[in-house]
Image (cartoon, protein in one colour):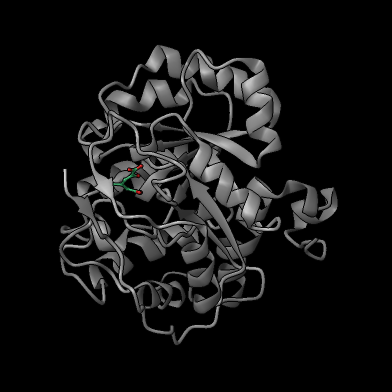
Length: 305
Ligand code: 0GY
C-alpha cells in the first residue's frame, strides 16, 4: 500500500481568531511509524503526522487544546495517541479504540494517559468488524470512569443503529453529524432524521466537523454552513468542533485548515455560540476537573491549569 499524504503543508492563516482556550475536538496523529507501526489491518497507510506537526498546526491556527481521536490505521494499539497526549503538556486528551477483551487495568492506564472516551467505528471501508454486543459491554465498563462514547457511521445506518445508540449509558458523540447528505439543504431527509435523533436524546452530542468530506458544493462550503448552522443554534450545549487534521484518507481536494477555522463564525455566528462550541462543551467533556460544578452548569470555566 502506498503511504498517503492527506494534509496541506502550509494552511492559510485564518481570518477568524478563535477565543483563548479554544479546543480542536477532533484530530488524529499518525505514527511516527518508526515508533508506532500501523496496524496489520489498516485500510490505508498514511505518511507520518505526529505530535510536533499537530501542535504546530494548533498554534498557527490560534487554537489552544486538542482532543486526539485514535485513528483506524493504528487499530487498538493506542500508543501513538498516548504519546502525543503525553507530549502535549496537559493540552491534549484523547479518545481510544479498544479491544473488547481489554482488562480493567489497561482501561485505567488509558485513563491515566489522558483518554476520556472510546470510539466505535461502523465504516466498512475503515474496519472489518463492528460488534454491537461487544461495544455495549465496553460502554458499560467505561461509564464508571466518566468516559463517553464516540460513534462514527454514515447516514444510511442511522435507523438500524438507533436502538444500539439508545442502549449506551453515557454521552454519545456522533462524528461528522452522522454523515448526512447535504445536497438537499438543511431540510433534506437525512438532515431531518439526524435532528429528530438529537431531539429525542439529550445525551447525544455531535461534532460539526467534516465540511471537506460532507459538502457537495466544495469551498467555501455554503451547503455545509446552511445545514449545520441551525444545528449549532439548536443544540448549542452539545456540539463540538474539530479540524479532523490530518484528514485521514483524503487525497483529492485536501482541505486548507485555515479555511476550516474560518467556517467557525459562519456556523456559530455569536460570541456566545462560539464560546460554547469551542470551549465550554469540549472542556466539560474532556477537562471536567477544570470546570467547577456551578460554572459547568452556567457554562463558565475556571482558569485553565
Ligand atoms: C475521520 C474520518 C475518517 C477516518 C478515520 O479513524 C479513521 O481512520 O476516522 C474517514 O476516513 O472518513 O474523522 O477521521
